[in-house]
Length: 303
Image 1 (spheres, rainbow, N blue to C red):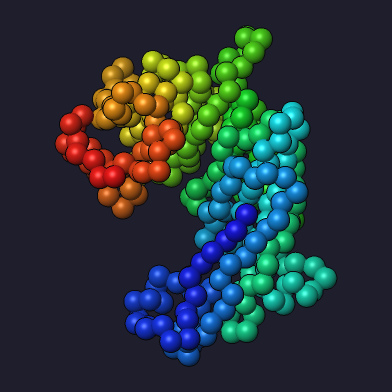
Image 2 (image 1 turned 90 degrees about the vertical axis):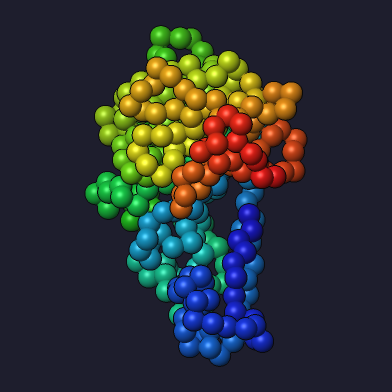
């Protein structure tokens, strides 16, 4: 796992706008003006092949440069490590102050440190931290998908506890693996997951129960993503289509894009600044396709 972020080079041109684009926890005004150069690549060497990864979304110092990274081991028992970039003073101290991660002056980040780890059944297909609007008694909340959707809490002492396993097919002997999910940022109680059984499930994570389940595609569903609002989400799958859904009317969906020769589509992501744009990728392709949903199914694409 490698983290690479921008630093101010010695002779790099600098303007006031550059400070806003560089995290003020890394470079403050005085350092930028002085042209301070710092190490800009940090590596965490996990003991296994890494796959699922997500940044903590807390906006305070406790969540700064905090990452959950999962293993890809072809066995039932897999792992997650929660790591955080540590400052120089923290790396030389015997313990980590839970609420002090301040990268100012000469106290700059030096390396990642593993805060805790927990076991996970099978390799996780995706991991996400709860949106910043979520508050669970000052605990962080993590969701993962694999065989099921699981919720985990992480307290301020980095103790991890599994809160529950969300299963919408409890009467079946076998489960259909979940390929991905997304957390609604406007209403953090809503999580949408997708599966190889062609369905998508909308969950109420506060009640630990499904709100609804729908057949989304003709083949496996590979990814799901909410737009910047509460109700709109998109999906892609093995049938080569990108479809748009509205939680207020799930009886119908709109096919926004179909790939040439119906090549499977693997991932979907929305532009959070302008929800008219979204992007997807084909299998075994080096290009991303950017779509304007205002143009409908014949939307021109930018590759």
